[in-house]
Length: 119
Image (tube, rainbow, N blue to C red):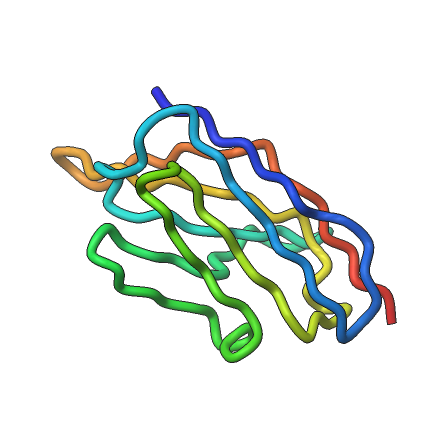
């Protein structure tokens, strides 16, 4: 069982940048995908960015062109570079590891890191 630990959150002004990092306690090589989710107060958790083991990347529309996800299998880390931040990006950001199971997928989660963007 892998443990995920996020870091890099904080308070930033609109237009600023933050870089989130996720460190896994074990190898991430075998995971089908690594991803970043976020959950704002009163809202459901949503997928922000996802990178598969094959390198395919997807983003939600609201962060395209501003956020970049990267995966380093050698270091067992996943990062999310966030530029041109907006107040709407304020949320708790979670790192997730997606493991393929016989039926469906299982997700490992980090504890989350708070990102607050002031206007």
